[in-house]
Image 1 (cartoon, one colour):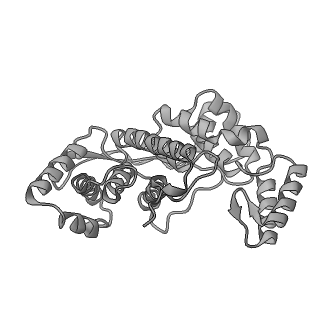
Image 2 (cartoon, one colour):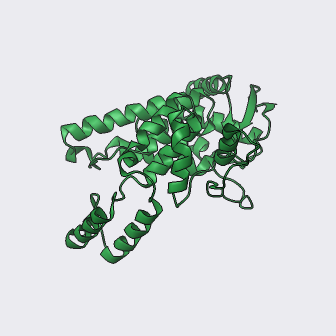
Image 3 (cartoon, helix red, strand yellow):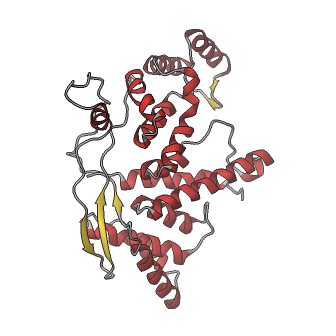
Length: 316
């Protein structure tokens, strides 16, 4: 049996968490593109920047008591307006704020630059890239089944990234890390999902020593930043730690810890009036635990919920 490199499945679990905990009811509209309208003269530049980067105000925190009797605060994070193409106007707005140390602008700029990270910087490079794609049927290390479709996509993305300096496009992780280090939960959750450029291996036996070292370092980084998000109260981080412990990816398999994290998350969701999503997971994990293990998991669950920052949910 071939052993999969841990970062592959482990980070896919983190991706699953993004979809799960950023769920919103279907009648809530997706955020609009970052506004490029000129600011009104009467408003301060900082206020205009906040309006451009954030959606409507989040509801105030609610103090509730979980099913296990632990008091918690339910905090809805404010929806951030993620830049959409064309990216040039958004880059012009975000870059000065990011350089001034605005963590929200740093995060959004990192997401923007990630979208342009592998787009050629000028027309000549674009044509060379397209020509090479037809010749090799590969691009950026991946097989290309339809070169004409790839050309169309590349030309569209080239136009979308006009106005984003080519020399800045590879800095996306620098900006995401800056925002994460400043304590922005969204950046702490997303940095591990935006991997640096490079060649990765799927199975351990196929990895070079350098690839193993690099991917293991990224796993440690993921644990670090997701740990910061967990300590900051993020409910999404509870899911990721539970999944890591349940699957034995990134962290050693530990059914007691997995049960504790998923049980804590289930109580947060129940207190928030969300749908029950973890019954099957908890039943499966619980079937593997002895009574003493289950008691230990429940004690750990109460400790998780006792975090004074608990619990930050995604936007409504």
